[in-house]
Amino acid sequence: MPKHRIVIDCDPGVDDAVAILLAFASPEIEVLGITTVAGNVPLEYTTRNALRICELAGRTDVPVFAGCRHAMFPTPPRTSSVHGDDGLGDVGILEPSRQKHPLHAVDFIVETILKNPGEITLCAIGPLTNVALALVKEPAIASKLKQIVFMGGAAFCPGNTTPAAEFNIWFDPLAGQIILNSGARLVMFGLDVTNKVIVTSDRVGVLQNGGSEIARQAASMMVNYGGKDPALHDPCVTAFLIDPSLFDGVHAKVEIDYASSLNRGRTVAAISERHRENAPANCYVVTTADDVKLFDLLNQRLLSL
Image (cartoon, rainbow, N blue to C red):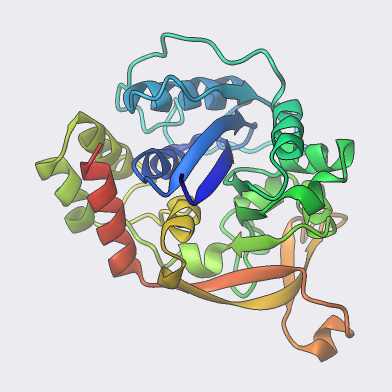
């Protein structure tokens, strides 16, 4: 039986796609479903892209559930071409042959956790709207989750969307704070660690030259993703489940500024008891990664697809 039974909540997105493919390639992980949220691109695109990635990997057995098309907290207008017009680097991945599941993503998350107490890891690699609304709808799931491992925030470094904020948290900062207040076991992969996991031509070349069509498509997406040497954020979450020894971090009391327009989405992490005002830590904040071993793992697994 796989070590981890997971739901991937995502907004594909190139790095989301690579994270999903890594999960599919790993016997330690059972993907029970993929839930989509608006973020990198609108919800219609993220849902379509999740279906396309499943099709590419031959995993049409994995259901895809569309979730929230708007953040809980109003999102300022923003445009970005980092993921291409279609969200997957415009590399021509085939259209899906199936439709999304009719159940809403929030309902799937709640039902799956309640049916499998203590077993489910939520891998949240997009804005946290779906996960937060699931916790609002059924607060009891916080204690029934195994853990939430999420990509978001910038605890000890500048943001990538504003000087203060990383994109996923900036997109829906209220959702992030709801999760931090939930009491669930949390592991945070912010820019502090993911900015150190850089795609290079040598690393992508392994997939381009020695792999299957799936590996070559993954390489093409990464090449077209955000220009030269981009950080590969979301696969860190999947890699952590496979081999947590690749990472290290600190326990902290994490809070998010969701009321300020200037600092919208700023992640504040208090490590010392003095700064926490004796409040307990609510999150494990990952700060370092062995990026060489991480890419070795990523390439080995993607080449097996």
